[in-house]
Image (cartoon, rainbow over all chains, first blue to last red; front, top):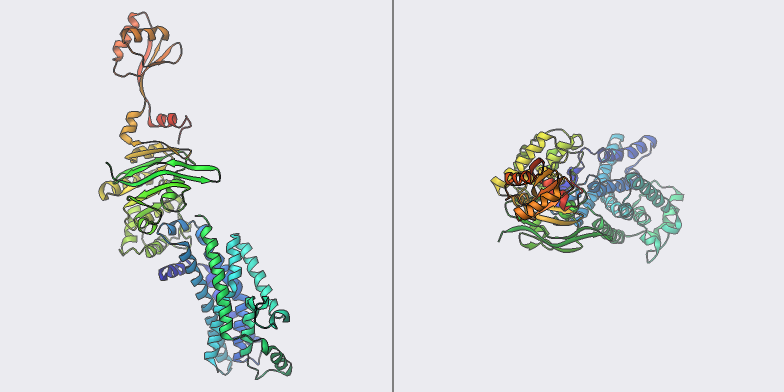
Amino acid sequence: MLRLIICEFWKLKRRRLFQAAFLTTFIIPLLYTLILSDANLDNMMSVVREENGFLILMPLSVVLAANLFFEEHDHDTLKNLMCIPVSKNRLALAKFAVIFLFDVGYMFVGYGTAILLSVLTGVPLGGLVLQLFLTLGTGALLFAAAMPCIFLVVWCNKSYIISVIIAFAYTVFNYILRINDSFMMVPLGLNVATFLPVPVIFRWLYQFHSLEDAGEIMREFYHRFSPYFVSTPAVFGILFGEGVVFMVLMMKVYRKQSV
Amino acid sequence: MPEYIIETKNLTKKYGTQKSVASLNIHVQKGRIYGLLGRNGAGKTTTMKMLLGLTAPTSGEIKIWGKSLHGNEKKTLSRIGSLIESPGFYPNLTGTENLRIFATLRGVPNNHAIEDALNLVGLPYKDKKLFSQYSLGMKQRLAIALAVMHDPELLILDEPINGLDPIGIAEVRSFIRQLCDERGKTILISSHILSEISLLADDIGIIDHGALLDEESLARLEQKSNKHIHFTLSNTAQAARILELQFKENQFSILDDHNLQVHNLAIPVSGMITAFVENGLEVSEAHTCEESLEDYFKRITGGEGIA
C-alpha cells in the first residue's frame, strides 16, 4: 500500500495544478495581515481554517481527486496497473490517501504561514499546540467533507470542467449553509443538519474561538449558539462515518469502470 | 503431448447480443511464438484482454500454466509481460520515471532492470524527454520495455509493431525472436499484418469475427495452402476427357472454355502437355500455381483479405 501511495505522489511530478494549489495557502492569511491592523493569532488561524480550508481547499481537493481518479483512464495506464496486478480497490485507497495527505499538508502549510506572518508583524504567539490540532483536524475533516462531492464527480465520470463546476457549487452551497440558523442551530440527532459535513465542522470549530477581543454582539451570538456546539469525538465520528460510506461507494463505482 | 502455457476452452465474450469472441480454443505451446492473426475487429484484443484478466469472459475457461486464470490472477499475472492496444503512460513523466513507477509496484528487485529494458528497445536511460514529447515509435518501444522489464516467462503482445518505422519493425522482430530462442520465453503476439506473423510466428491462429478458423504450425499451414497446375488451352472439355481416360485423374477444375486447373501435382506437366498436343489441342500456357498464405487467409475467411 505504501508503494502505491508513493507512486501516486510520483505521478504528480511536474503537475502545475498540484504545485500551484500549495501556493494558494499563503494568499488569504497574507491579505488578512495586510488589511487588518489588529490581527491576532487566533483570528489568523481561523482565517487559515475557515477561508483557506472551506473556500479554497475544499474545491482543490475535489479537483485533485478528479485528476487522480480520471488520470488512469485518460492516459490509458489502468491496464498496465491491472496487469501487475494492482486491484482497483487498493488503487482507489491510495488515491484517497494522497487526497488526505494533501488536505492535511495544505492546512499545515497554512498553519506555518500564519505563524510566520504573526512573527513578522509582532503578533504574540500562544496556544500553538491547540491551534495545530484544530488546523490539522480541520484538514482531516475537510477530506471527509469533500467525499460526497468527490463521489459525485467519480460517479458522473465526466470532464474536468464538469468536475470544477460541481466542486465550486458544492463549496458555495456548504459555505452558505454555515450562516443559516436552520442548519447551524439544530441539536445533534437523526436530522439533516447533523449529517451536513460543513455546518457540523463549523459547529465544532466555533467553540474554540477566543472571545478576549470580541464585542458584545459577538459574545451574545456565541452564548446563543453554544448549546449547538459539537464535541470533538462527535464531529470526528460523524465525518469518519460519512467518509467511509462515500469511499466504499466510490470504490464500487471505480471498480465497475472498464479498462 | 505438447506443454501448453495458454489454453482456452470455449472462450466467449459477448457485449450485449454481439459476440466479440465465440467459443475460442487456442493452444500456446511453451517456448514458441504464437501469432494470432486477424483483421481489425476480429476479436484479437478482446481475447488478449481476457487472458490478462482485464475483461471477464462471458463463458469458457482460460488456463495459464495449467491453472485457471480465475482466482489465480495475482500469481499468474506477475509472470506475464503485456502490451495491449496503444501504449499507456503518464505524459508528465519521462520514460525512466514511468518505468520506475511500474517497477516499484511490481517489486522488481533488479536495480538495473529499467536501464536494461530501455537499452533493449533502444531508448536512453534517464533521458529528460517527457512521454508526451515521444514519437509514436518511441511510445511503442517504451511499452515493449515495460512488458519485458520484470523478465516475464510469458509475453502477450497486441500489435507490438504498430507505429514503428521499417527499421524499428525489423529490430523488434529480431528482439522478439531472440527472447524466444535464447531466453526460452513463450510469446503470444497478435497482428493484422500477415507478413509480420509469417516472419515471426511458429504457430498461427487465424481469427475472424471472433471465431478461430484455423490453428496450425506455420510449416503445416504452408503445406495446407492450395497448389495446382494451370493450363490455358483450346478446348477444356476435350482436355478433361484426356485427363479422365488417359491419366485416370479427376482432381481438376474447369474454369471456362480455355482454362483448367489440375490439383494433383504428382502428374508430370510435360506428360500432360504431350497428351493434349497429340490429341490436337493447342496449349498456350502451363504453369504451377502456389497459393500464398494471404490467398489461404482470404479463402478461409470468405475472401475478405487482410493488410
